[in-house]
Image (cartoon, rainbow, N blue to C red; front, side):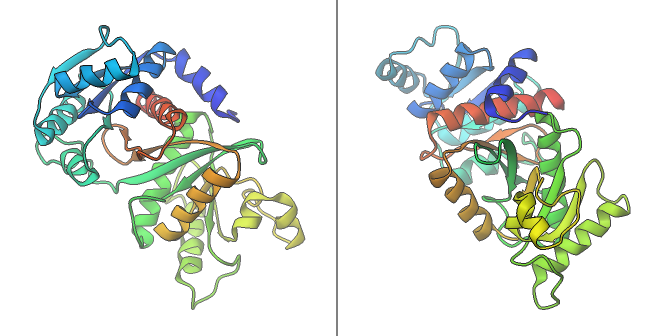
Length: 301
């Protein structure tokens, strides 16, 4: 089983080269990551946006874009639609946000005619390589769904399981976390967690092992689980952390990013193809890992 991002990158290189459609590509950090991805044999790209601005960015970065296809479109909204259309028409395998606001980007992804709708919930899956854990964990959903109900959580869970399998985790162990590890009728996240666990037992959620409610300590630490007397295939060994709401996910994401010396990448899952939606605050390394994850998911599809 893959345990870190170095192994992720090696796995990507063993697959055929996938192509990213970059929407509004005149973005220096994104161009830098895309250039590095191609140099490392992780992914190719077609750059959609204002050609002059793209080349100006390349000059600033001192990179040569002569081996990249550039499609000129100075209108940002049309550029995003064109990038998404390249993916929906199978001329590219994944789409990445460049210098455009998230709302405009997602409108194009969900466009009824040219978009990547599947009828499923779109959710963010963050993948962390945490040295202290000596394994990769997935955290979901830290960016898209504010307060998901049980039905939405089921789809968020299934999206994360697909990403985990693409990485190389054959039977992901999913911890549905709450503030406590016992069912409390006054705490809805514990009720949802118990329901998801039972749905997994009865075959309504397939391809993984689900347990919950689990508090975050006994989801990640076997010692903590043992101390609390929790016997489970998931407790202390979770591959996927399904959080109860966006606040929990956001806090966990940023805490891991800034305090754990971890590496991370993330994608949006649930669309017809992987969607790379990075933040300007994300490091170049994080953007590169996000591209690698998207490439693996594209290959798995």
